[in-house]
Amino acid sequence: MKTPIADFVARYAAGDTARLHMPGHKGCGPLGVERLDITEVEGADVLSHADGIIAESEKNATALFGTGHTFYTTEGSTSAIQAMLALVSRGVRGRRPRILAARNVHKAFVYGCALLDIEVEWLYPRAFTHLTVCEITANEVERALKAHCPDAVYLTSPDYVGNVADIAGISTVCRRFGVPLLVDNAHGAYLRFLPEDRHPMTLGATLCCDSAHKTLPVLTGGAYLHVAKDAPAAFLDGGREALALFCSTSPSYLILQSLDLCNRVLAENYRENLQKTIESARTVRKKLLEKGFLLCGDEPLKLTLLTAASGLSGEEAAAVLRRSGVECEFADRDLLVLMLSPCNTEADLQRLLRAVDMLPVGARVAVTPPPPAVPERVLSLREAVLAPAEYVPVEAAMGRICASPTVACPPAVPVLMSGERVDARTAMLLQYYGMTHISVVRG
Image 1 (cartoon, rainbow, N blue to C red):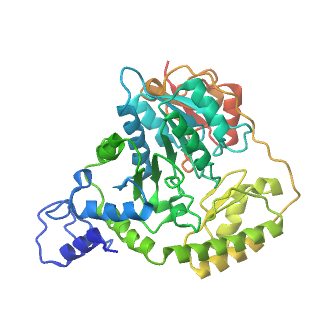
Image 2 (cartoon, rainbow, N blue to C red; image 1 turned 90 degrees about the vertical axis):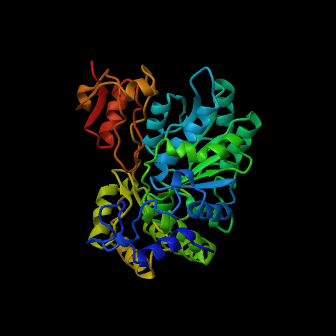
Image 3 (cartoon, rainbow, N blue to C red; image 1 turned 180 degrees about the vertical axis):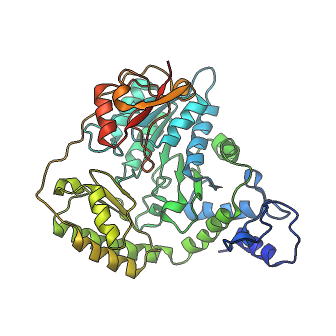
């Protein structure tokens, strides 16, 4: 597969050209990659109006993912999430757009809704297990569609700890109601390349974002906005403009090259290497289960240990692994998350297996985070996010209204949404997840 962006930059870097253009490092510097870091010189195309080498590379990605079009962004899924919201908003006239969303959204969704003045009806899980989890069935989506008549449905799948939603069932319901399904698939770009394709676009999503950098060999910030083949023409035609609303006019050509080169990786032996990595993950999973750990999630490259159920906090488990030379993706008082990819070596796997041997397992205990109540909504997301605000201790925030969502990143999933009132249960949950202060509307 051709790599037009990377090939162009390589030629430019090898040429004898006086760089009287941005960036200021002029191709020289201590990092060693500056010669490949360019701007929109003649022939380099323009991401926000791509019709040259970037358009050609996106065409390759579109074929690999089987979409109507796959757009590049160098600013992560944050920009793609907000572009999806903008595309939905443009089709609504005479009122505020309304979106039905599972509660475990990333804060990028909250900020996007605030900027676009979107009203959100939240879907809550039947049982609360963790801040990042909101398991919703197709039947629950159908009931909510009848009750709220939204302009779109929005899900996070896989969620941060590896649970994959019933995208096929939910998309069938959405299509029956004529409502687009938007999926934050930030952690699941590789799902397209499993023996049984589980990517949201294959399973019926209308719009979807992937953080390519999270699971594929792409530099941090590289991401995709996918638009389905049967999406409304306005979505296919307007995707690039929607991204431009939220993206810098100076995209990183280092990230664009990595997205471009990733196409070749995916087109060659990626599927075979992915399957080998999945087998390695199964080996680790089996050893963890044999040791007595509980695991959750069905995403094949993610291992989420419910450490607290074995008398060990996630932070304590992470410290044990770190002493063995293994750094985890995320840990809190309840669990620990490990992410594998085909770029992990056999040495990485063996080190992880040795580190697992060092993890202590205690007696099985029940872990029940304090269940939240449905908070009182006082202001819209936009009103709250843009209001004058102050940070106060959680214990002093009782009765106050949440301004910008207070979250740890990762996982960047809010306990309380902007515009909602802090109550006793919410305060308890904030403190449970280690948040000592909260942004509240002033006055």
